[in-house]
Image (cartoon, rainbow, N blue to C red; front, side):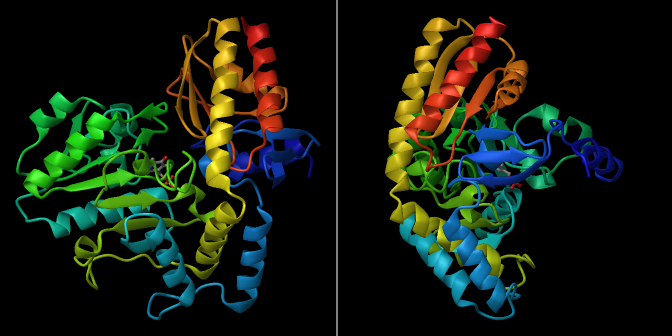
Amino acid sequence: MTTDEIIKSFDNYVIANYGRLPRVIDRGQGSYIHDTDGNEILDMFPGWAVSGIGHCHPKVVKAIQAQAQKLLHMDNTFYTELQGNLAKLLSERAFSGKCFFCNSGAEAIEAALKLARIHTPKSKYKFITATGSFHGRTFGAMTATAQPKKFENFQPVVPGFVYVPFNDVAELEKAFDDEVAAVMIEPIQGEGGINVATPEYMSAIRKLCDQSNALMILDEVQTGMGRTGKWFGYQHYDVVPDIITMAKALGGGVAIGAMMAKPEIAASLVPGTHASTFGGNCIACAAGIAVIEAIEEENLLENAQKMGKHAAEKLTQLKDKHSIIDHVRGKGLMIGIQLTAPGGQIVNDCLKNGLRINCTQEKVLRFMPAMNVTAKQIDKAVEILDNVLKNIG
Ligand SMILES: *Cc1c(COP(=O)(O)O)cnc(C)c1O
């Protein structure tokens, strides 16, 4: 089929709930993807952070291939060595918690919310989340997402959610009471525009939760698995959360989500309270283990720190040349470029010139390359963006 034929047929049969770019991608390797017209595209937003160690990492591909010949799936009626091993690897890199596996970020959020409700007394039913957050599209996760335009057409939403302004300690204190089961935020808001939580905010959440036996949940779906230069975003702060959620980069391109909770809290999720048929799937767990091993064998946490610094410097230099750039912010390879005007056209123009980036919240360009990105690839990306901005300005 030609590219046009593929798109035409696709649109006839697939629901149009995404604004898609008119390209058909059929393969990817590392920081590059290729479309069916033979174009190579430098991907600085691989898989919306799913392909955190690049497309088709050889170690992940090999692990999946080997596991596929052994066992594709085993239901949670039985034990598998893989699921236990992945949980151990994650636990050792976080706060010695216990894991529940599912298939996406939203499911990990739902698991966290359910655990918070079942673990705390019945009188505690409220969840506090922060404006600009993004937690997913299922009903609970959507309601947790404190952006009214995301849920206004779906009323009534799940009861019990209270929204506070992000990074505002005073407003958080005002909203807090004995009925709060949990506070949930992202250490760095992703879809919300790369907004970094302040240390004071993190500490205030921890303190308020401790004082009233509420739980601190951190959504690490986007910040987790090394993107910020540490395994998890919270590790940049002097706090330990009670629960974290993971997904995106965890499977290196395979669908997987996980929720980790401190053991004494995790104990509340007894048989019959929560489940996921595909959770802990053999292929997904094999991929997850390979991702963690690859990150360590290739020193990718260090590379994310180094390349993050390099990219932030290069992008900040563009600010002097282009007045549309207000400032650059973020941590590690989670970088936002705050614009003074909408950036949709910039994203489209970059793509025409062989570079893929993302724009969120209308005026924030998201630059989130794979953790094994090279300085040369970053320089090339900055050069393309520079040229695009020249022609726009
Ligand atoms: C992407 C994302 C989610 C939702 O994950 P899905 O896999 O799309 O359900 C939740 N939280 C954060 C912080 C995310 O970035």
